[in-house]
Length: 493
Image (cartoon, rainbow, N blue to C red; front, side, top):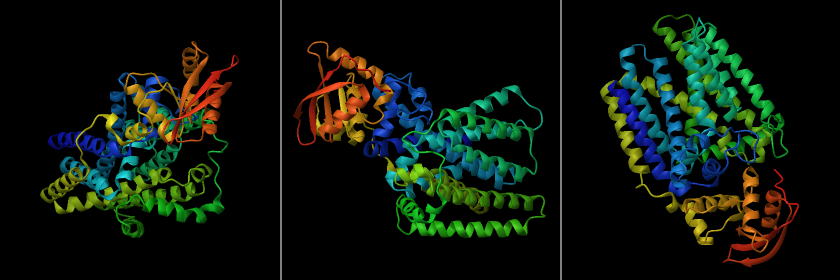
């Protein structure tokens, strides 16, 4: 119990250290938009898309103060990420520790070491993306972990309460990220191989997972003219170099990537050899067999995921950004967690606690910065450089528009974004534009870091029929544009 409390305290501490150290420098429009949606209009899905269920904005909705709302989202996203790492640690120890009395301290030591090592190994930008940005990967993993636990607790006789809770976890997980069905498949297959049986709970898990995947597939129609599930196998080799460079760039050291890849190949080879060696074993030998079975499964999953999504239309359209390979990265992280768990178990409790503590101190010292009010974050300073004045409407560069909108919301002023994803709140924006134009029939939009023609097009696409008027430059990279709503204006959502 004592070490579980230490793990809980560490979860809170490392979450705070990560948010305070990384958010001021790397916060961006994609993350900020979660807060804008939470404050202005929570749609079923992320604005401008027909997928990525808006769970996090909904959870932050009770906090109506814009700064607190944003901070809640940042802490929630980061907490989910570290909760995933705790699940990895817990699973690794349960898999490798034969004696139950060693599991509590070992889980905490592995968790502290793993979460600290991630901050030390990854670049600050990559650590931000993995922890504060992309909850569409970490939230489903937490929910899938809960669903798997419920399936494990429902082995023979169905419990209505556990089944409904499992269904809820799967429903939300697959709504947030339908691709997590592949992670669910990995868990189901591996669990059955380790347990050497297909229990009632696992059958329920597989059935409900498939059911909800097809449900969200029908609802979550791809956008942007791309078929989300289309792959082109012949493009795999062409794109692998790009993907490799993207993944290598998330590590602090240039030699870390090749070294980790070599370790992965060595681990896979060792796992396959150990599977052959222990195939008939029982007792502790069976523990070794299961351990290397999971290692082989994780590495195979990472390889298949990387190969499949390297030939993916949607990934190619987004320049093969490494975020599309986060599940592969986390599978490799889970594999190393198992290896590290075995190493710590061998060296004993005292040395393990010392190593975890040293890594924890190093990660905190490297990352921590004193907490600041969100308005002091870099992204809001960039907006202030273009215009310190507040406006009701912004268009232009996506990466500046949404920080400008949120900055004004923090100032207590109403503001709307008329740029990419602005259609998610077009009805309210149009109503406010009508209100603003009651006196002289016009309203003003600040165009940020974009040609006036592009801003005019964005306003028209969001609000409908408008007539552009005078353009007044504001500094070097912004301009006021006057618009007049046409009588037939309706938001083209």
